[in-house]
Length: 189
Image 1 (cartoon, helix red, strand yellow):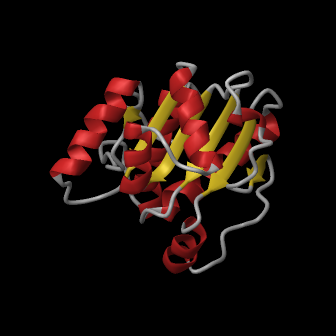
Image 2 (image 1 turned 90 degrees about the vertical axis):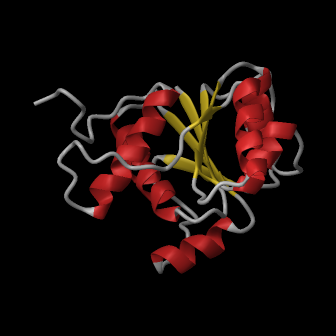
């Protein structure tokens, strides 16, 4: 499986960090999992502000691509990824998905996912939502994307902030077709 994680400049860098940590751990055990990631222009600034550290240039088990490097294999419909997750997904990135366009690798990767009918999961992180945001969510859904708001669930014995964050990360990875046994699921003991 090839999964691409796009990290935008929306608030919620902790979601991306947790996803990368879990994906890197899984990729270390599962050579069939290929993880690529790309960050928007503003993502490193938000990451530094929210997490107090610089965004890593290297993540073991995952390959980071420059946002302008269109040599990435997943930039072409002839070699599409199995799934793409934007986490967090800014409202600007949502608008580009909903209406097509953009001039960077992240926008192109989303276009490829949609045109090749691959899974595209948008972990939106904004509140309150304007009518423009809601209409863009409808348009993106109609185009084939899955809108997954970054809303934690609390029924799985959530005790820490990381536990709550993981409930969102696991849901996004589930939608991508990668099930990780990280959180307690409803009805499980």
